[in-house]
Length: 249
Ligand SMILES: [Mn+2]
Image (cartoon, rainbow, N blue to C red; front, top):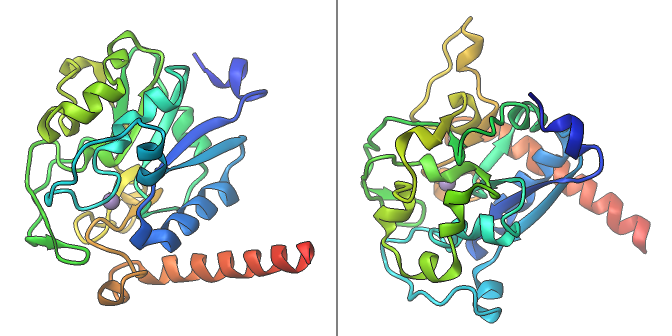
């Protein structure tokens, strides 16, 4: 069964990227890395908290346990996709190394969502620019999720619910039963600093790097593991942008 044959020929696949004003460059590079390798049409939409507040779709008070501006807004993905078809949500601190079509091909209609089911406990107690790192079950599962937006269970994720439910309810997908959560290969959410590449084991190679503790766009993480790959992609993005600018002028 493939949703490709019937839909993607005409309709771009929607990808919502969590946007944080402190990480604009990370967003741009993540977007660039997706588009550059994609063999299917994509529609990439940044999830910007200020825009959602202006549209009255987000009104939660910010709490100091939220390390990014998209900690809660990410759960508006099915709503923002008009509860239609499938859509991907991903944090902005990802760098894609593979064609996203490979992930879209993994979609199985029987699930309400699909994600990488990490089982890890972060060792550091702070992340990024000093925001507190919290440990909870299903940690990091919500950072990259394929949402079956049309699935009956996901209709629960209305703006009212996203604005009022607890972080635990949302980040642990408590509106779903366990068997409604499908699994994809961990390489699609390869946690930099936690996951390891095993030489000769293709399954351990990253398809998307997730700089979950902070990436090279932050001064203090400029030498993190896999920083070189992100810096290279960033340079390519800058060149591409410059070429575009010259063409427009
Ligand atoms: Mn992240």
